[in-house]
Structures are given as C-alpha cells and as structure tokens.
Image (tube, rainbow, N blue to C red):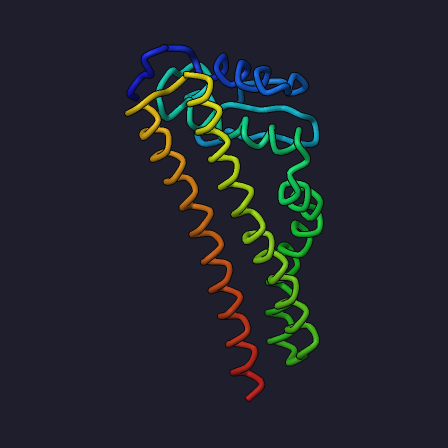
Amino acid sequence: RIPTRLGRPAASVVDDLLRRNGNSKVRIGRVSGELTDHYNPGNETLNLSDGVYGSASIAALGIAAHEAGHAMQKHENYAPLMLRTTIVPAVNICSSLSTPLFFLGLIMTWDVLTTLGIILFAASTVFALVTLPVEFNASNRAVAMLTEGGYVTGEEERGVRKVLQAAALTYVASAVTSLLSLLRLVMIANRRRD
C-alpha cells in the first residue's frame, strides 16, 4: 500500500518500461481477481490484476515489472523461458495422468503403470525446476528496469526487492514440494515391491 514517490499507476509504468526497452509488441490488459497477474508469451499480452493495474504502490510496480521481465525474456529469446513455454502442453498432460496411473498401477499391482506414473510426475518436477531460473531472471530484470528508469530509488527499490523475493520463495517452495512428492512416490512404489 506504500505509494512510490512518482505516483504513476503500474499499468502506465510497465507500458513505459517495455517501450523504453524496445518491446512495443506487448498489449497490457486488466484481469479480474487477486494474484492473477501474468504474461502470456503466446499472444504477447501482459495482464495485471485489479489490485495492481491502477495502483501506484511499490508492490504493484514490482509485480507489474516482474511480468514485464517475462515479456523481455520473450523479446530476447531467453532460453529457459522458451524451454518452459515449449514443454507446458506436455507437462499439463503428464501431470493430469501421473497420479491416476500411479495409483492404478498400485491397485492392479502392475509395476509398469506405477513406474509410468512416476515418470510422468517427474516431468512436473522438471517443469518446477525449469521455472526457477525463469522467475528469478524476471525479478532481476524488473528491479533493473525500475531502477535504471528512475521509477524507484533507495527504500522503494528495497521494497520492490522484498516483494519479488517473497514471490520467488513460492516458486522455490513449489519445486521443493514437487521433489519431495516425487521421492514419496518412489518410496511407496519401492515399499510395495519389497
């Protein structure tokens, strides 16, 4: 809720950030809900939630600039983003089939299905791990664009960093959770085989 000294809304700032960095393809839109901010590399749209779009708060600028960081990744063909974007459809299929196949394999005592379920779940874990450098890079880009453009300084920059670090920890937690869940599936399968 702490406003920046400039008082410009996040949507205006992010539009300016992208144009200053040579990326005029991205359309900025508004999306309802909270924490629904996202960049869609497929149609080059950056959507900001109701609470971020018109807000001039330090947190809103950090969130919007983070999404602009993703847009710049696409603009510059950042390899981890390209990889993540490419594997999304396969990961969606894998994640929807992994648990049913795993448990079906356990129930039917058919090791092939259980192993296939584990392999498909591992794809989701790989996706979570690939996501980490993409997210950290987008946050680093956000801070750099905001400070270099003079949108935030001093204490405001530290505030942006705190917001983005907190957001990054959710991705770290997701990756750790996925790794632990994968390990748990392997242990369950091995225990049943013994």
